[in-house]
Image (tube, rainbow, N blue to C red):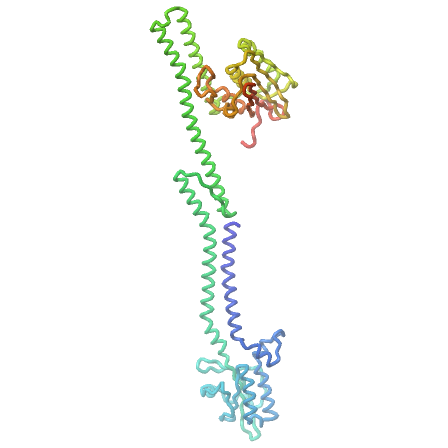
Length: 508
């Protein structure tokens, strides 16, 4: 759920819940006011399910008023009977009403509910209309006594001796007012309490859902500031803050990978400097030693002098080759070496390469086997760079060859979108523990870095860089005392290329 939706829902609840609680308070007040409603309705045989039930209950005293009017017309002597009057008054008392009968200015009967002289004094004289005139039996009038309001009905008539008699039915209507005043403070407090609790609770929950992930991110930034990236941020929600936490975690991972890579680069740089220093110092020391031997007269014959000079020339050539390989590898590593890709018929190209190295290999007692198992196939390659790959692999095989009759074999495997070139030798093989590292720069199986048992350690690293620029892969398989096979792939022109160059990768 998004933060926007959370806030919107919280605002809606803040509005609806207090109103709901306020209505509950009003209903409770209503139940308190009409606590005896069931008893009253049962007495008057009123069904609460019927329409206008409350209205009928409110006007229940009209029944008695009508009955008393009938009594006044047809049996006025009953109005002088105390038992009859008390009975009527008791029934009126059940609906919070009372009976007062006045003859002239003398009270004939007064309900115990209304014996306050102030109430009697507040009652009006004869209505300003003709006595015995009919009036609306639902017509109510009100008087106020001591902050109390009373609703009354009045009926004036003449007795047989021509005296005016008045019937009053009074009801104390201040009960609702008292109840409202009594519960007004409670209702207001309840309303404000509902507002406070609702707003406080929702504010706490919403703010907690926002502040908790923010605190996690704050702690994460402090960890990063202290250069500690060994932690993990787990999103706790799926809203915008969850997305932010996820993005922050991805940033942390990228940053950690970048720092780890930087540290690895630094370590590689140190190792590179150490290896270069060793590989350059060894021939330089040898050259210096042979030069001093010539100067000191150790080489005292023309043959020795020639031998020393030949060794010096060989060491200088090795240094020159090492510097060239360092320069090439550096340009490859920095992506600053240009590649000139073109359509190359790979079978014919390998024929030319094999023919070029065949004579030199025969001088080392190594024969070449070339299995042409596929039809002419066009690949995309940089001729010069691909030749460097093949020569570096063959050079490695020649350096480590320990057999009297050495063999190097070439083979091609046709794949749907690429070709696989395999170069196999029958040399000493590579230890399984060393095999994963032979394409690393400056890696040598001989840890002593003896120049007699290996080259600079850059040959296969350069081959790997070149093949990767060709969008290919390179790998090795080897068995001790049986030989090694180095394989690499080249992309076919018809499937992945156009016009002699690689199509641009849509992901880059």
